[in-house]
Length: 173
Image (cartoon, rainbow, N blue to C red; front, side):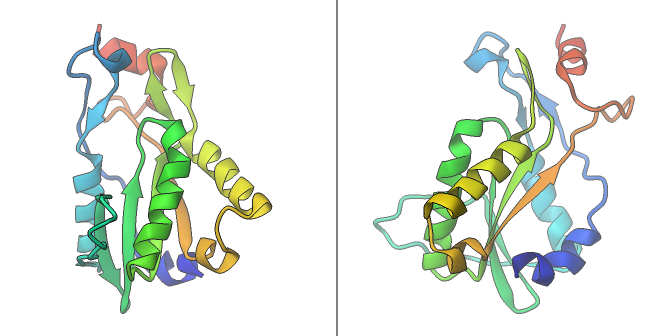
């Protein structure tokens, strides 16, 4: 349901340039920080979305990455760029956003998250967690139908090579 509504917006997304950086390789296993959230939001707004504010109840201290309206419906967007263990929490947060009035929610996940020990496909991991939610009743089916998982691939702009452990180490050696 959510993809059918957002397909015109998402199908027009193309390359999104964003900066990656490792501020301190000794902290948090050299986790990569980026401005992907802001650049994705900008691309979706340029593509036809409009800014939207979702008001969460005061007892729900969650902050969403951003929200937008498209085609008369609101979409809460949660982006998980690095921690596969937080994906299930992101799905729960989507339930909170939907309960607070969002029409849809979207979790955006990289297909090639490069870290100090290799590359993880967080999108595949998210799909597995989502399927487990459906299988084991972690969320109502009509609510889960309003959540979309969106995967993206990361590339090194100067070489167009997929971000990998090798390209990550080359940039920060």
